[in-house]
Length: 218
Length: 218
DNA sequence: GTTTCTTGTTCAGCCTGGTGTAAGGTTAGG
DNA sequence: CCTAACCTTACACCAGGCTGAACAAGAAAC
Image (cartoon, rainbow over all chains, first blue to last red; front, side, top):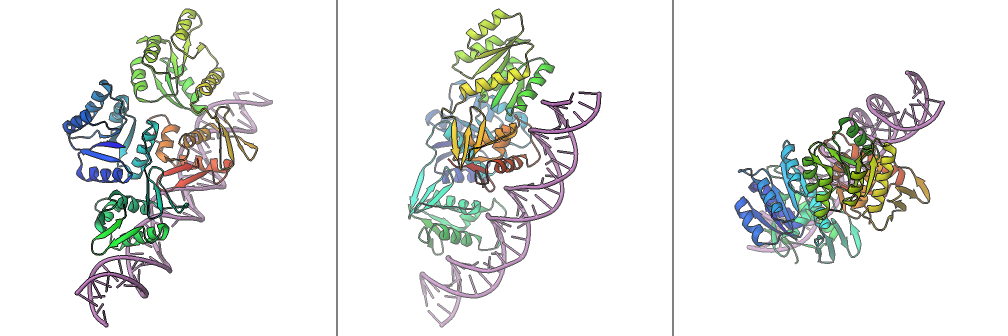
C-alpha cells in the first residue's frame, strides 16, 4: 500500500514513517501542505495520514479540497487531546478515522490495517526469511508452521529489522525505536531482545554485524 | 450498530436515543438537517431514523439526496398520524420503513432489529469460533449447545470483535463503538465487558494482545 | 407508588507476565 | 592469550489486565 504522511514534526514524523514502513507499506513523507498537494495530484495514494496541527493550521482545508474534488482516498487524521472540536470537524469533512496525540504507534498500525481492510487494499504482505513467516498485518509470526508469540517490544525490534531487510540496522537505531525519544536506557537491552528473538525465531534469523549492528536476510 | 437519529423534539428525541442505546446500539442525535448532512458525509452509519417534520427543511429532501448520491443506508422515517401523503412519498423516495407518531418505543426497537437483520452486512449469519456459535441476525449465542444470554452492551462488544474476526481490535476502538462519539469514559469498562464475555463464552474465545487490544480467532 | 430484578459503571486489590538490569559466559579479531 | 564486543540467563520490579463487589439507574412486576 502507498501511504502519504503529512506531518511537520521531525521526530514524530520520522517515527511514524519508520513504523509504517516496517509494516510493509511504502511511505512518502511531506512536511508542508503544498508539497502534499502536488504529491496527491500525481501519485495514486491508498491512504493519507494527515496531521491537523500544521503550523499554518490548514490541514482541514486539504481534506476538504480532496473531498470536494471527488477524491475518496481514505484519510486518517491526527489531533491533540484537547482539540475535540477540530477532530469532529475533521470527521465531518470526510476523514475516515482519527488518532489522538500522543498515540501509540502500534495502535496506529492497527487502525491503518483496519482502513486498508475496509477499502479492500492489499493489507497483509507476508514475509518469509530463514524459515520464518511473518504476517505484518495481523501481527502473526510462525516458525515452520508453529505459531510464535511475541511481546510488544520483541515485535518492535522485529519490525525495525524488517524495515531495512537485507540492510544493516545499528543498535542505536533499534534503541531509538524501542524507547521513544529521550528515554535513555542504561543496559544492553537491544542485545537482550535480539537474543529473545533468536530464541523464538531461530538462531539464523538475525545476523550480527560486529561493531555495526544487525541484519536480516532479504 | 451505529445509528443516526434526526429528530428536533427534545423530549421525544431523548427518549428514542435512550431506548436505542438500551438495545446496545451507538446513537448520534442530530436536531438539524445541516448537522445530519455533515454527519452522514463522514460517519458510516448503519441505520438512519429520520423525522420528516424538521424546522430547517424537509426531511424528505435529505432522504432524496442520500438516494440520488447512491447512499443505500437503511432509513426509517417517522411522521405524524395525518401525514399519509408524505409518508407514501417517503417510501417512494427510498425509505425502508416508517413509524407513525406517537409510536411505541418497543415497536420501534422491533423495526430497527428487522431492518438491521435485513441489511446486516454479513451474508453468513452463523459464526463459530472456539466452540461458540453466534447467530448475528437473531442475536443468539450458544456455547456447546447451551444458549447464553448476553446483555446489550455485551452484544455491542461482541459484534465489534467479530466485525474484524482474525484481526486485532484496539480498546479505544471498542470504546468508540460502545459510546457514541465524544463520550470519553474514564474507567476500564472495556476490560469489564471482555471479562464478562469470557465468563459466558469461555475463556479462550477472546485473546488479549497486551498493550493493544483484543482478537477473536477467525 | 413501592418493591424487586436486571443492567451498566466504577473501583480496588490481585495477579500475570513483560521489561530492564546486571552478572557471567562466549566469540571474534588481533 | 587478551580484549572488546556480544550472548545468555536469572531475577526483581511493576504496568497492564482481570475480576469480584459495590453502587447507580432503569425496567418490570406487583
